Amino acid sequence: MKVKYFAWVRERVGKAEETIEPPASVRTVDDLIAWLARRGETYAYAFEAPRVIRAAIDHTHVKPDAVIAGAREIAFFPPMTGG
Amino acid sequence: MTALVTIRIQEADFDIAREISALTEARTDIGAVVSFSGICRGSEGGEPIAALTLEHYPEMAEAEIARHADTAMSRWPLTALTVIHRVGRIAPGENIVLVLTASRHRQAAFQAAEFLMDYLKANAPFWKREESAAGAGWVEARHDDDAAAARWTKS
Image (cartoon, rainbow over all chains, first blue to last red; front, side):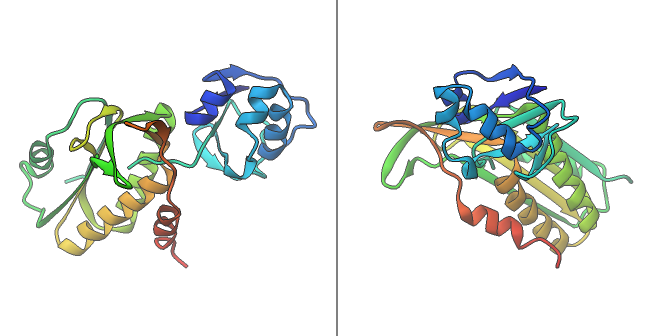
């Protein structure tokens, strides 16, 4: 699945997007954040405060317990400041 | 006549009078047009701002604004609705966002415009980066915006 990062999440991870293949044990958005955080220091830094991170699956906001199976694109970003 | 919904995300500035004309042209069923424009302030917390840069998640921003527009159209009797959100570098005094709502009577136009702005603030995937003499940093989201959006939820 494709993962996209925005704003300071992108800056900390060091890339705007990538393709990932998490194991089946990674079921929810929360699981995915924990899995990503273990990939390296930049990821750990980006996800050091998971409660602050917002997620979207296929362009729709989702809660931390949302299931990721079947997602084509998952995005992680800080709370929004548009408008 | 069918309702006219216009949604644009663009770097270029917009002309509010022209957008209102586009909404009202050749229609005789509009009695009220409400306009809200969000503008880049020149300072924050006493510190002058040099510029704002708006980043966004393109596909999701369009989808999310369209969802909010659909909700507004279904909750209020609107004849037309326009949302324009700028992205990229914006200087103090410049426009950031425009919401226009049109209806036969004013209550729908006023309420829908406020609803759209509250929801845009809380849910639309845009992020502001602020440049000042002190450096550059990401603007933090305000809890007020989430609370403002929540008050529109029907109980």
